[in-house]
Amino acid sequence: MSRGNWVIGITGASGAIYGVRLCQVMLDQGLNVHLIVTEAGWRVLHDELDWNAGKRKEMLQEHFGGRAGTFDYHPIADIGATVASGSFRTKGMVVIPCSMGTLSGIAHGSSDNLLERTADVMLKEGRKLILVPRETPLHAIHLENMLTLSRMGVRMLPAMPAFYNRPRSLEEMVDFLVGKVLDSMEIEHSLYRRWGDNHDER
Image (tube, rainbow, N blue to C red; front, side, top):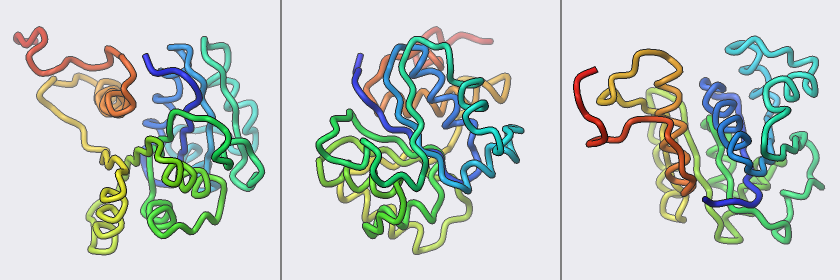
């Protein structure tokens, strides 16, 4: 199992549950999570999951505290955070969900906030960078930005659920996507039934 420090970014795209669930699974496995949430990301956590964005520390402790792994939250404006430096060792970074604005900022090296700066560090240090874009439909600029990053070795993992495993709930659909992310991180899990594994009628 791949251990060490992992950075998770949650942005203002729809699908905040993906980021929350990924953090929970990683922490339950004893991994070290460094979380960055954009201001728009906090808005979506409120709108989609009823998080009280005015009580951020309490919300983070409620949903991520008391698990096997370690958890550190870095405010989006804290450009002096450990994760903003290439000398701070990390296994890589996942932005889940990734808005088109954040994707554009990463593609063009803007580094306007801690999340974009940290993603830039992953690129310059040659570490894993996985983006989970959540938008539809996509126009040419979105696609060109994705292609630019893909050519640099960034893994594009759009939030597209599968149905061959016959999901019975929203939770199973979320776990499938999170499982695909963990596969790209090379972290073992059992969140979904793989094709060919116990493939009998449900």
